[in-house]
Length: 231
Length: 231
DNA sequence: CCGCAAGTTTGAGGAAGGACAAAGTCCGGT
DNA sequence: ACCGGACTTTGTCCTTCCTCAAACTTGCGG
Image (cartoon, rainbow over all chains, first blue to last red):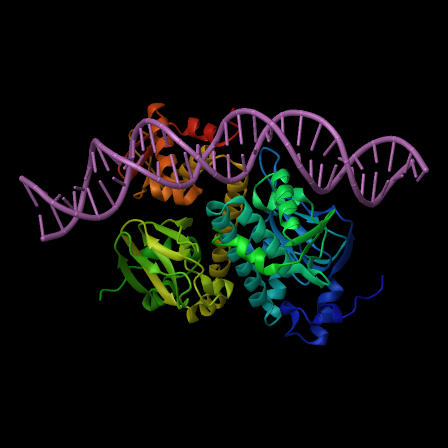
């Protein structure tokens, strides 16, 4: 197995304060792994024996209800830690992580979490900052689900995806991983039918352009307008 | 000002591993304060300059949307830390804390957070455990809001309150702090009218008994049934 | 290159629950 | 003791969006 290149971590917040030597140490303990689109990195309820860092691709964090319905709790973008149950002192993963596109990730055994936070300057702080951001996002989503109409929620979900992992293209901003109507319905608590209708309408209005599993937002302004106090 | 008694903290998880001397140190730095029902302990968006511990009473953690609607994100029971923005490296509170009943709380300046976590065995671990539990609860609520019908959500909210702060009485289990129909609607993303109708119906069925701002669950079993796969 | 599964679109009908309205009841404060 | 505000109940209407249904499209695997 070839050694991992140190440049993989240098720029990332949790590691940015560390020396070459420290990064080398960390990388030498990491297990790199590739996952196909649709495959599971870890599963809700299973032993949280490792924590992970996403290097490339995108991940959907999914929760399954008792009735078997799935809802998407969160998306993870490259450079972010995920599956950090140990940070919260959980011994089991609270949700399932699924590769939304082909994924490359590193992972470490949980026992190293305590070591990393103690030994590496800034690692704990940055990790908890990430957690704080996610908690904030979840609170926002609860508020959205509780108060907003479906159209506004779908607009907000789309917007969030462009912000978190948008890629500028000629037409506008493209969501950088495959998304189906069903996926969007699982983010917003609606049906794929309703999402399809909304996207069709928006396409007609020139706000988005979508093909199979692929969405480009062509008019961010108007999508933002749909999000809020829409008369 | 009389010295605070050490027994206040002895039994509580974040402090249970500490010695008398350590608890004395912690208490001597704490600012105790009483709040009237309905008053704010801190407000969303303000500088997170202190973190808090609830000694007595109950707290509602509330988020206000742009349109001015309130939603209740969380309830805090006695013995729990709250407003722990510093743990997540936030410099501003993500939500508003309102006293649901008369409240007694301690608080410390944020600069002590780093000191507490570094110095006191088990403090960090327990705090993050609390955070993990809240994160889990929020995920569950997102799933609920996204997939369940109003009746099931209201049943679940009621059940959660009895579990987190229920007090056994002759008739069943009583929610230990004042709750209005409007409060419940703010927890479940519905209207106070719908909540009122549901409670009336359940009262008729002998599942709950409610008076003004006061709810007793008289048949936990059947309420649980309403929560889930109800035909 | 064909078949099939996965994804998407569109239509029609109906039910859940929100909006609006009005009146009743309880409690704290002057 | 009474007034007024906060809380609750109940009724009717109407919109939103889910359900059910069916056809169409795309792209991958054999």
